[in-house]
Picture 1 (cartoon, rainbow, N blue to C red):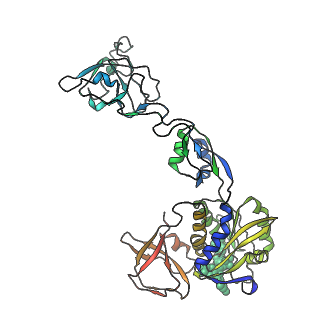
Picture 2: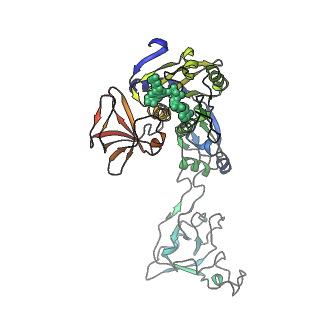
Picture 3: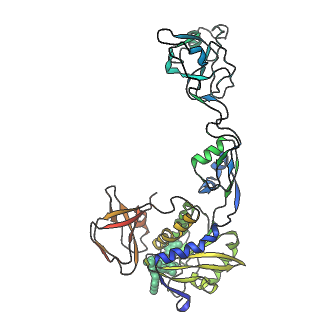
Amino acid sequence: MGQDGRVNRRSTEEHRAAVDALLAPLFENRVSELLEVSPQRLAEHSGEFRARVLASDLLSPTDLPNFDNSQMDGYAVSWFDLVTASPENPVELLVAAQIAAGDGAEPLASGTAAPIMTGAPVPPGADAIVPIEQAIPPRFAAIASSETAEETPEASGATSDTPVAASAPATVSFIEPVTPGTFIRRTGSDVRAGAVLLPAGSPLGPAQLGVIAGTGLTVIDVVRRIRVLLVSTGHEIREPGTTLGAGQIFDANSVSLSVALIEAGCEVTAVPCRSDDAVDLLGILAAHASAHDLIITVGGVSAGAREVVRDALGPLGVEFGTVAMQPGGPQGFGRATLDDVVRPVLSLPGNPVSALVSFEMFVRPALRRLAQSEPADRMREVAMIIGATDSPPGVYQVRRGFVHDDGTVELVGGPSSHLLHSYASSNALVHIPADVEHLDAGDPVMVWRIDE
Ligand SMILES: Nc1nc2c(c(=O)[nH]1)N[C@H]1C(S)=C(S)[C@@H](COP(=O)(O)OP(=O)(O)OC[C@H]3O[C@@H](n4cnc5c(N)ncnc54)[C@H](O)[C@@H]3O)O[C@H]1N2
Ligand code: MOO
């Protein structure tokens, strides 16, 4: 540590390791909570389903499928009835009652074929499905909808005004044998009752939540997400939608970092501190610390006369120093006791680009790696830079860029850390290592894609 509590300039690797070590305890013995999985819950609280991970092995309460059912629209038959079928000697069967998905199924009598729809239960006595295209006639339009083979149109209540029933043939023919089991989706062929549906640690995406719903479960045990208290600071920041006074700006960081944290799998409470007074900041932190796992502050860390974050947290033991990086040079990190609870604290610089780049460089990778999210890192690729550029000596520079399909990357905007609009027009961060001071057009550079 140098004078006034500042650490010496450290490399990006050193700071990344420090952030990893600071956050690692948050991922040990994580608390679980119940999540209700229902369409209503999704409609009303869709955010609760973001970045969820199963806390314990989930056993399937049922077979999936939970009954033998048809994979095709066609006829349920007994294979034995079609043993002799051939084009020269078609087998003609009586048409039994139709079975649709959602119906119960009466047993199939020998010598009959039941029109059956995809997902409908295979009736007892049937052991194969012949797709409608392989039957004669090869369509249902010409057959009765739900009358049994014994029923005449009149007996079933059909009149001459109901052409489907009136023109219904009572028989259907087949010209080839069928193997038992054909086009039957067997009970438990996806998962067996009592088997592990999803193991502990499974990320819960559309397919995982879908299969859970498919078993009928409505409540599951999930890992509680890291709860982040996000405190943007500055006398000048005001909530978007309000009226600005002289020298004031709208608070972009609360929004950009909240979204970044949510996308990284956290729960976020954003409570801005619109004051440069350390007492005000400490009041906010103390009020919210116990309900959160991690505190992230933004702004107030550089060399000004009133640096609210440094002023408040420096005396509590948070270290403030400089990383050899641009943007994102000034950084703070450590553990602070706030309202009798000890919490890890990360203090990011206030310039909007610096804050987001710091998040991408240190916070996001740590959160994702420690949560064992795959891939932990942004997609990285080497691209050819379109124009020449310089980079300050001894500083790891992160520029904003746009990668084109042909593998080239053009820089978007300059290196200044207030250019959030340029960041918003980019799809990649362009990494220029500390020992590179100049790049010529066509030189290869490492880029991290930020558009996924
Ligand atoms: N003499 C020096 N001055 C500065 C240094 C330095 O080393 N010596 N470092 C510069 C660098 S690099 C950065 S980055 C900034 C970091 O400053 P702070 O973390 O103290 O941030 P602030 O001063 O509070 O704000 C910086 C800038 O960003 C604007 N800002 C802050 N919060 C928000 C917000 N929520 N939404 C939108 N914009 C925000 C703020 O108005 C300032 O313009 O320090 C340099 N100075
Ligand atoms: O390093 Mo600062 O973080 O340029 O904006």
